Length: 356
Image (cartoon, rainbow, N blue to C red; front, side, top):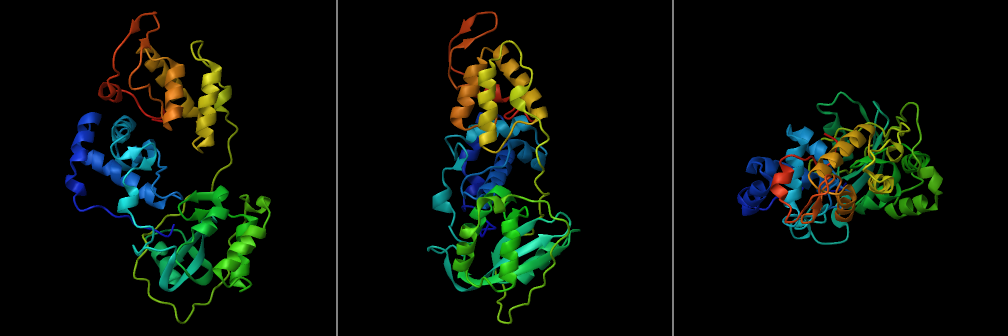
């Protein structure tokens, strides 16, 4: 993404919302703030800025916290700083451009769309910078991987997202993409100067069939050399070092919708849940399926109908399984309990995603 940083408001460390969220989730204020920073970073680099896609389990791993703690915090943030996966205050606090100015992607001074490959796993970074050669050095610093600058395109544009959109199906993380026939052709034509403008690049990509954008295995790395433009400028905004992700692995054949289910769980409800996760590109793994079935069983023992839990989680856009906040609960023995659902007590013992 063009934006490799995000803004914090001045009173963020002392914002009273964190105390409220900490109390509602049963977690410390410092943990709440740490989770919020992880969400902000994800929202900044996501293709749809202002919407985060980092998993609760990944936040927990990064912070050395439990999945339950992170889930409790993100749930308590709903309606306060989050609306589903959307950060409610994003537009008024975050610039649409790196330089913070208004506009539609233009800025003074030239920039370069650049393509960098990692020789370890042959993935490609599509970025933009006033000095891509310096960017490659930044990537190399402290990394065991070797990075090769494949091609550059001089442009007045400040935003490379239009190019990113063509390769969305092969995106790994942020600006890193799997190789495809279209990407290889783009790099080759840019390096040979067949494409010399941003507009020509978009026109060329628009002319390619969809099949050429599919990820393909590539042996070796195309180490095409590029010539440094003599009039390149020093980049004042240093890019944070990014570690290229591993290439996307093909599925292992596991089908969560076809697993054996307990008698009390309707297969249609479970299939709908699995399909929803798959549609949001967060498929249920084999281990996650086992844990989510256990979670549904525990919720059922507390009086929550599995069908209601699944329906509520899908309707709310959750990655994990949550019962409705207030509902009539029917326990397995047939006893019905009425009253408001105690969210804080629930979060003290239930994980969000089943992927502990």
